[in-house]
Picture (cartoon, rainbow, N blue to C red):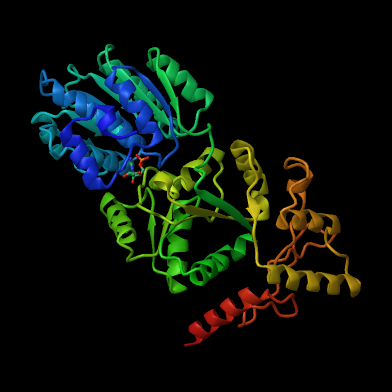
Length: 473
Ligand code: AMP
C-alpha cells in the first residue's frame, strides 16, 4: 500500500515525502479511504499509530477540492490538552502547507483576543480544547454554520478529564448534518455510549487489540520501596546512559520535586505539569526534544498527546490509578513501529495497581532486577533467620522469586500478587509481628548503608557512595 494508491493529491504526497513517511500506517490505510468516502469513523487506535495523519490528510484533501462557503471553520478538532491540540495543528499545517487552507489552534492559558482576531479572518480547520472553544463561542467569535466535520481526538482522555459536559454543549452549537470522526486509544463503556450518540453508521477501524499497548514497547518493572525509587531511577539513568526518558509521577508537586532531585544527582531534568504556564511547558518540552535535558518529569495530563520522535524510555515512577493511563503513558515510546522501553518502579503498595494494569493488557509485566541485589538481600535474610529473628514472610519471598525468575504459573494475580515481595535493603519494613507501629528506620550512614541494618546491594552501594562523595565535595 502506498499513499499514491489512497488517492491523495500531489501537494499532500510531497509533504508526506518530505516528512519521510514511506507508506501509510495501518490506521491511515483504513481510515483515509473511509473518510474520503464521507463516512463517520470510530477509530480504535492507540497513541503513536499515526492517527493524526489518518484524519488530517483526508480532511485537507476534501477541503482542497471544495471551496469554503463562509469564514467559519469547516472542520473542528477537539483535543483534551493544549499540547495535543498544538501538535495536531502542527500536523495540519505541515501536511497542508502547499494547499490554500488555514488551520489554527485555540486553547486556554493564553490571551483570548489574538484568537478572536484570527478567527475573524476566516479559517478552515479549527483545533481546540473544549473549554476555550466554549469561551470563544460565548463571545460569538466562532461561526459554526459551515462546519462539515467534527473530530474528537483522544476521546477517552477527554471523558477522563471531565469534558463530557463541554462536549455535549458544543454538540448543541454545531450543525447536526456533518461528518463525525472519533478516535480513542481505549474503548470503555462511556466511549461506546458517546460514539453511539454522535456517530452515524460508523466504519469501525481498530488497528490494535483494544486496550493493548504498542507491541514495540518492551515492558518491565522493578519492585522497589517507595523511598528508594529515586535512587534506583538515578542509577538506571546513569548506568544505562539514558539520553531521553519521560518519567511519570502522579502529582504536580511530585514532578517538581523529582526533577529537582534528579538534577542534584547530576541528571539534567525538567518538569511539565498543569501548574506551569504555557510558556514554561513549551520551554521544558523543547529542551527535552532538543536533548538539553535528559529527563522530563510529567504528570499524566501534561504529557497527554506529547509526540517526541524516537523517545526510547518511558518510566512509571508511580503507577497511575487508572489502568488506561498506563497505556497512554507507554504509548509515548515505541511510536510508528520504533522500539521503546517502558519501565515501572512499583512499590509494594502499588502491586494492586500493577495487577489491574496487567488485567487490562491481558498480559504480565515481568519484574526485572539486579541478581546481585537479590542475592545480597537473601544472604542477609538467611543470616537474620539463623540469628533467631523471625524470617519475614518466607512463603511470600518465594512468590516474589517466582516472578523474578519468570515463572508465571501462579494464579492470575491472586496469591502471587498478594505475596510480599522480597525487599532490597535499608527500606526494609521494621514492623514486628504483633506490633501496630513501624519502628523508626535506622539512620543512613554516609555510604548509604543503614547502621546496624542490612547492607544495600552492590549496585546501590556503589551509587550511594558516589553520591556521598559528591555531597562531601
Ligand atoms: P500520531 O499517532 O498521530 O501521534 O503519530 C505518531 C508519530 O508517527 C508521529 O511522530 C508522526 O509524525 C509519525 N507518523 C505518522 N504517520 C507516519 C507514517 N506513515 N510513516 C512514518 N511515521 C509516521
